[in-house]
Length: 245
Image 1 (cartoon, helix red, strand yellow):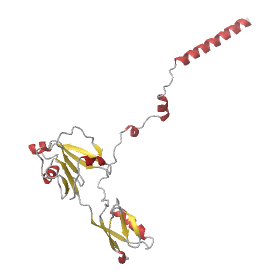
Image 2 (cartoon, one colour; image 1 turned 30 degrees about the horizontal axis):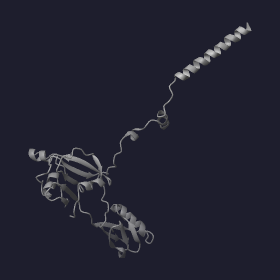
Image 3 (tube, rainbow, N blue to C red; image 1 turned 120 degrees about the vertical axis):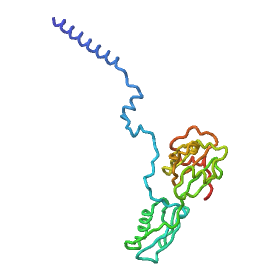
Image 4 (cartoon, rainbow, N blue to C red; image 1 turned 180 degrees about the vertical axis):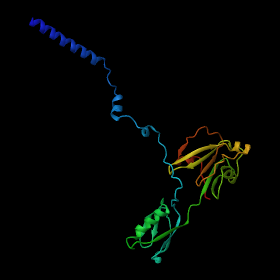
């Protein structure tokens, strides 16, 4: 009787092990590609989104450039009043203090920089900074126009007016496909294609874009079929080679 019980018990254990082994063999193994993905976890929306250039803030303050001229007035110590020019390396030379880097700063920024520089020798200096000379607003027109180049932007100017200022279209101009390049950051420019031929023919100028300082227009000779919405600023030299104002 005992032998029969041990026989049944051993048979049960054997069957249980056989069922477990079959279940393990039937389970699919995780692939090598699933392992790293599982370890990393799900990607966020920010990770999935394509890279986009950082855009300029609305109504940005003017940033100092090379050759800008600043007038510094010291309320309590007028003997330190001076006029300085931003040098080619971006520095200005301050009387009794030395050089400080100011290129790219706004007027409030440079005022604080100068105040800190003089705080070592003056107690709570009161300084007023005035921008006397600066880079004048401009636009550039290149390609198939009569006089391609760089022009001063005076007042409200549209694309059609800019083309006229640049001497108008040449006979080989593709004026149904005029490109507007607008810088949105130090490294990126936004592109926009406009059909000036259709605008001028219909007399509907509602889509005639108003230029902003630094805008660039390009009138091609042959059709440019595709262009990304944002392109690196460094590539704009392919289309433009402006001269001085």
